[in-house]
Length: 281
Length: 281
Image (cartoon, rainbow over all chains, first blue to last red):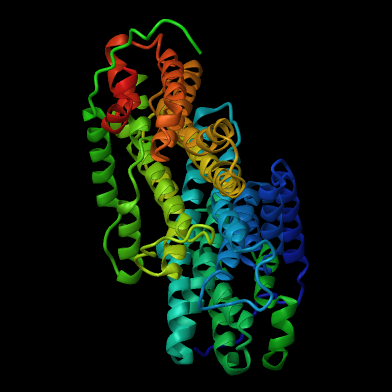
């Protein structure tokens, strides 16, 4: 993919990302109380908060703001996305093709069971987030958005979403497939789809139109694919690909209010990216 | 618990149960299509349909009918409950304290990943089941019931529901606790809570009032506890306890339309129960 360099504002500012993540963290801190039995709630807190960082939850909040919503409309969905990611991380450590050197902190049985509870908990938080409206039309509209976000997140974390992505990944590890196939089959399916879901959910919950929802879904695919490449420490070999994906992603943001686009565009340049991508800037 | 024997109709008819289960089976058959990649969809079908039978999904449909709803209002929730049970069964086979003699059919990685997808899929089905109404007030009411059922099922299958129950169970197996404690900590928490959830969800989706919802939630606890005792083949030692639980359960059905109570009451006497309980009748 060639073309003129983007003219969208692209300062290397991770502040928006950090601030959205802090809001999600605070929401989850309140939601996940330490309660009896500690053997259940402690590993739950541990797995929820110790998973590697991901940009999908923040993308959800920033997409909501971009379409004119307020951040609190998307914070439960962002929290659910974080728990989906945490559940996948917990169970990834249990896959027999992937022994971890350090071993799970709580033993495999507890990581299995605790991981099982994280996605339902996230969807519960999301279902509970539907506010009470006095006007039935407003209520119907609000509930319909929340139900739609539940469908999006459940599908992305289910059998033909995250589960299929992890299956592809295991298959690719075994087969040593080529680099191009790996980007399409693993990064696009795994990080791409969950970020696409995050972008779409944010736009749905913020009251975006169908076109905005689909633009932010596609933007999420590109953000996620870049994240996948960065996470696998394969940027060196895929520098050109990352540049192309960034261009494609930023294209999706055209048409939105230029003044409001910077926060979400900054996800293309987290400090991690920035370090690795400086040579291409 | 003593008291006069119940006068509610209690014929040994498993027909209602079989018919509700057949409706759920048909719903899931349509929902779980065989699709590419087969390595993902085949184990999903296998795990969804091969889990040991449970009465919770049927209870959900029968509770919906008891409060005046139609069965199709609860069939997605019943299907979700069946998938929650299937997910728990799949992962139970992976617990290291519980090696299965036959081993998982698809290998532990696939059972782990496939099991992970079942609960989100069930909640997705439920979220999609909210019908479109032209009247906003009716729509708001309908969406609110579906969201409430999602919260119920997500909570019952999450960290402080099913997950905690399985934790209790593992702990009890290790500790060889006494029989009374086992009934309270394992049967009540595990089978009791998921059946309670099923009764409540059926009543919510069928448009029952709060009192009806709570009665059917309590009825579910007793049905589930009996199921737990029967499943563990411990009826012999707990015959008296089963009789008490049945009495308590049937008490909760008083006040409902006597003509309509027989189907749901029959869950207290599945043919399996019946064989084992004949001596107490």
